[in-house]
Image (cartoon, rainbow, N blue to C red; front, side, top):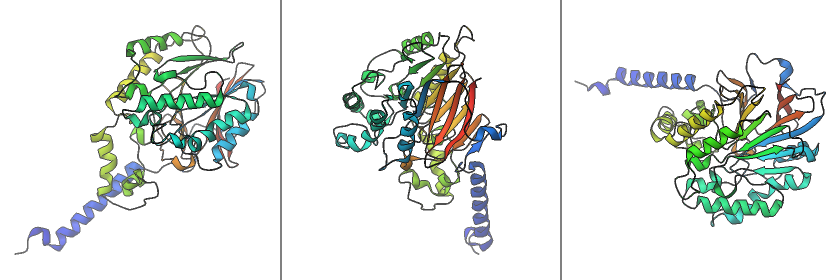
Amino acid sequence: MKRLYKHPSFTYYIILLCCIVQAVQLTIAGCSHTKPYYHPDIPDSAKHDGKTEGKLRYRLLLLGDGGAPKPDEPVLKTLEEWAKKDATNTSIVFLGDNMYPEGMTERKKHEATTRLTPQFAVVKSTGAHGLFIPGNHDWASGRAEGHNALRAQEEFINDALAGESNFLPSGGSPGPVVLELPKTDPVLRLIVLDTQWWLHQHEKPKKSLEKVIEELVGLLDTELPVIVVGHHPLESYGSHGGSYDWKAHLFPVRFMKRWLWIPIPIVGSAYPYARWHLYRSDQDMNGARNKNMVAQLNRAFATRKSPPQGPPLLIYASGHEHSLQVLKGTVTDYLLVSGAAASRKVTEVISGDNTLFAHQHTGFMAIDFLDDGKVLLRVVEPEGKGVLFHRWLIF
């Protein structure tokens, strides 16, 4: 009598079951937005540049994760064009992971010229204000030498730019640090956080979480629009937020090298599930420290007073995910993810109910503050694509 597992029908049904399971997994996973995604309620008029009548008072250019630029990086070329338009009223904010793979450790500090210089060269060539904030890779990817690597990068950037407030928070402090821009008759309050400080488990400056939150709550007490910047997002539909498209299930080894298109059906789905449900890195949003950080920051943002006593606009902007996302917030008005400053690093992104715009593409975001009190957000992509999305945040 044949064993059951040797029976042809049994083998057929096992193969069929595996195919069904894989089909269900891929259906649930969905596809990354390799073409721009717009929420169904977004009008066609918002899918390109918007006309402005007011005069520009100040512009923020937001981009992160640019620490592995290729020669003549297209994003940096387009960034330079935008910064030149009104350099004296422009700040470029680099949202962390300024130098891959492990920041300015003793092993890698010789790479600073090729990693960091192309980014701050835009600042120097345009005369705009440049601000770099730290990311997890700048802290040596969380290793013991992270604090030393961070301070080395801060010194390198400050020496190169020789301006004011070019690397914040200073010395590995978590912040918050506040800048009101422009200095004369400011139109916005920029609050800077070092979110990797919350996650780093080795040497770092001592400060209680309660003190950080207390100071952040105090800084929200303003009648100016508030933009808070930190490296890690509060919400995301990329891999750090637990969202994986079908390629992560079929080609799981691409997480090591993007060019390793080796199909591993069925078994390959173990990687995204294990990463989210078992391994739980603090760099992902289900990590214990990450979840605590997000909860604490949201608790602080929830204390914001309603206008006119409080800020008429509250935005949290981040990188970390290598994509472009504009999300409608809950305790904040908007959540921006702009971590696509390097062509080599762009990763998949899907969308949720609160996604207004998402794209798996390089680019940056521009926020314009006008003299009539209006505020305009634009998503800009290089190589002639221009503005793919605009939204009036105050109108």
